[in-house]
View 1: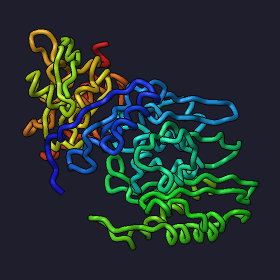
View 2 (view 1 turned 180 degrees about the vertical axis):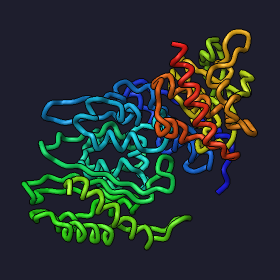
View 3 (view 1 turned 90 degrees about the horizontal axis):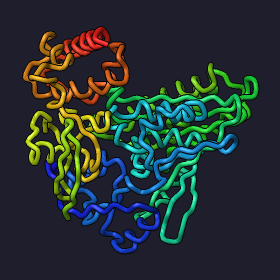
View 4 (view 1 turned 120 degrees about the vertical axis):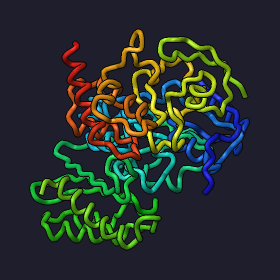
Length: 286
Length: 159
């Protein structure tokens, strides 16, 4: 793919409110695309991928970068909240440590200082680290579409989010006390690269028995990011080494990996099994 | 489409007219003549174009100039003190041989500056994390980490 050093010509539009965003979308329809942090969109535009004549910059839209908390309701993170701000937020660290960890280890300082949680989620790259974490946390995404607002599970975004939809925020319900979380990522350069494969796990234990578990996989195709078959193996079971191994094997079987320039799909499956096993062990503290 | 923007770069305010598609890097180098900030990969991989935007390290090649409107920017040119006295980081890079071809150096120094502004006593691991978006193809990373450690020490002493 040819990479151009200069961006193609376009008009930059800077709405100040959600109302103005709707108006601009109506006016420009398929000629526009959103710009959040820009670390992915500008890269694509230099590759001349998804080039549009208008770019709607969301930076100035009031209220989109706010992180709010409720004692019982959980955390709501505006789509324009910067990844570093999410990672540094004391409340997110306290109430949703899994997401704070993931946002703090994703990419590099420069990327996290510009990149936004909403941008990372809305791009829906299979290599995203935030998607598996949000899926494991059963997060909900609020979308603004032509017909108004609607809320969908993050794991369904791949089929629910259409062109022209604006991701407004992501909501994570408060985890019950005693819930365990684990995240593991495999990347060529740990502090720089996208996750070749990753796994996020949220588990609720009843003594040594698993009451509930959610697993989010990274580095697999979007529809296979939530391996429910693997979760079912563990629910209601006493957590042993054998059970965890079976869960990891099933997750790797269900997760659909694809080859890339560095790794074959088979190799990724092997590594996926290992990262799932480690993430479950971390979450269950075994 | 053209936009009127104001940038405060290294303490000086500039009123500029920029096209929508111009990156902050292009404006710094081509409109303001501040060529210390380097254009290398131009795709966010190498960190050569790192500048501080309101105190945070960002990649100026991956940011539209229009989005920097009203912001305060610090480039490598703004580091040296009066009468071109080198900043402790610049001095440490020279003293430790952390510069070979020198092309990546401004990016490394700006990333290190962002780190030391926040954390005056970083561990080697924290330094490595802070410069993880900067690539030196002469591969003199050990000296770079040592130089940042030395600069941090000097800056702590100076305070």
